[in-house]
Image (cartoon, rainbow, N blue to C red; front, top):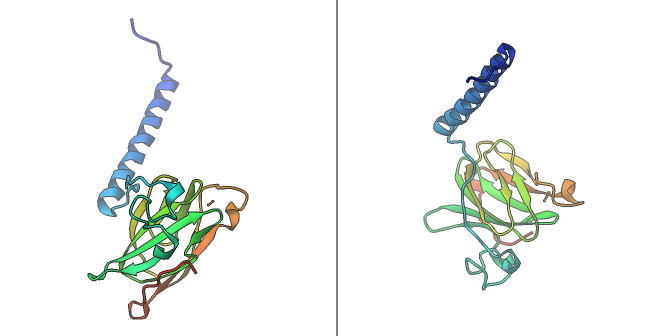
Length: 176
Ligand code: CUA
């Protein structure tokens, strides 16, 4: 016994199926060609111990360890905490056209961060480190915007990123 499906309904099933296939193809295309994919760093952390040296990662997210560092090989890492209602450090300077690794953790609730003209667009989930590597191709000052509703001050939660010429870049630690 076969189920009767109205011809009009059949047509809509193929339209929806077609939309699904196109959407899937676009996602696969951009993942393959532009390396655009959802962040997938699964690294757990105890959010209640972020400020302590005994926390996971040996105090990576303690106040004194936040900021922009450069290692001996020249790799740049921005270590940042998101907390109601701001990003710490509030201002970061990074060089243009350079791979920059962001490591971010939340102190309290779910936040997000988005920087225009880049692939920096990630949720900051309490209990996990959000890690993303990006490359800014435009010099200038841009806001870092929280894009997950985190409370009454959500609309005021933003930081600033200053993208400077390579020869003007200096790593700077601290939360100011
Ligand atoms: Cu933090 Cu919205």
